[in-house]
Length: 483
Ligand SMILES: [Zn+2]
Image (cartoon, rainbow, N blue to C red):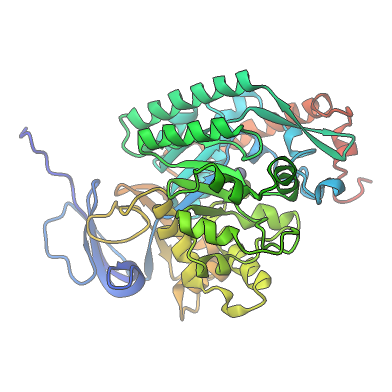
């Protein structure tokens, strides 16, 4: 054995359409009938004929090759288990949000955590995601399962000093326990350091103070300093609900964005989920347009996750406008159904509704957010693009799939019609991690079984977790009468 082992080179020939990075425009462009060559380290050749050496060869006829999608905001924990429970619920006094009174009642058993994570990873990968940021509570199976999935993953352990408490379905209170929050911060730092030092180069760490209003200004400032010293990103929920918006106004007289600016932490390292209720939003009462300028000036990224918010009747006004104001935007799925392509479709539709125009945003803009926008948020130029030297993270789309046919513009067909049905194979670091809807590194079907038991446990625990001790059927009657 020689010391310098050559890595096996894989070539895919005559791909009908490659969505390749164009250095001239800094965006993506279609390339027709070209080859791609790659090894586990990077992409070696894009477009035209590759006549170098190779160990493996396949044909790309009737396929589109897409850069891997970058999901900058999702949660495993109990979220995959919460599917279909409180979707029709919301607290009227809290602008119809279900998050504070209802969602927090769903509890996942320790044994089901790995399964829950597996469901999330599986659904994301099958929709073309190759990089993801999981904001969750640390547990023993977390990092090993992220690695086993084969995806590129950032573990973002959440921590906060205050917990939400809803009294009598009308008042949101904050129960502060600074010592506990500090302990969680210390655990998060250890977890992030473990992820960063992990032998898998696909694993990274991100600091995640949970919400702007559940962390003290001191903790937020310290977390930013810790992110700076480690040269890693930091993410935080801010301007995500009207309840939070009103709470911050009461405490500081400022919107979330203005408050973070005053703390001096609105910078290019920060990813904010979800930045909906800015001073310019029609539900707020500021009647100014300062927040967008502050976000753009700071270089802060907005993690846009329209599916879960639109399910609650809430909409960001509009993501096209954010982009036109110079704000970097990435896409996240937040919670179930963890379908990145459906999320992108919803982002496009919601933006056009909020912007009252088909011209508010184009398919190419959404695609750019879900690739280059996410990569920028993570400080990377080697993902979210198909280019020589970039990571070999991509998916192959079956242009012959009935949901894709007939094809005039393949990207539009994928986003508006076929979504994950046409995703044939997903590659990360040149390795195939999903093919024909099957995950190669994870036991998805086994996880589904575990989740059925986990739902039984969660249903039993709901009355004990509810301050008013209501049963699940009182809290969330079924969508149809049960005769
Ligand atoms: Zn979130």
